[in-house]
Length: 228
Image 1 (tube, one colour):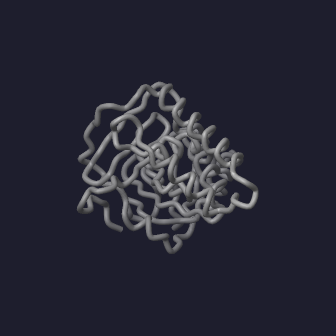
Image 2: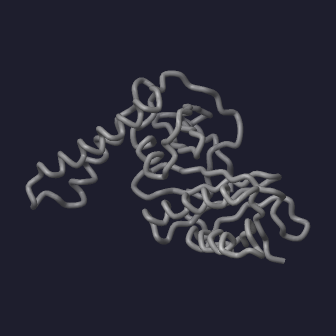
Image 3: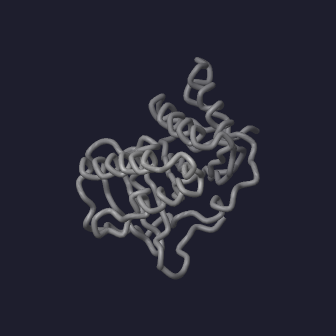
């Protein structure tokens, strides 16, 4: 029996499809790890160069179908999942129902995820509009500094050096790297008026109404993770 996801409504499927499309924009061979229990599906992805984990959830109308199984935990191709979700939206007969693609060998990041619980609120995060402005300023600075480089120095190593310097800066006194907010913006999460900073063990998470970006804190010992 093919495992299936029954989305709560068309909007949930459309939002997930948009997230998957953005991941594929940065990595055509992207994989995502799916975890579903009850009426919630969590999708984890890692856009290259950002060095973060992106988390998008979707509401399900009913637990996914796969015989007697009541939970789902599998790594699949983001492209194949996107095709399945898109196909369900185009079919009247299977509207809101997407088949789970065949499992793939997951990349190393898929074996170590942020913890499911134990998150606590952290202070000091600026207002959402200020965070968006900070990201815009960082992007403008990166472009300006690249344009200032002589043509012969515009090589990948030099661009990566400039990028690391800018995106590793922290937001206010939170210790959260600017690249986390940049990733949130690139994936369509940095919208609306809700923006929270959470921490759990060695992890920090920027949470919005549209998804979360998690990152390991530098200099924090020990692992607080969800094993594969």
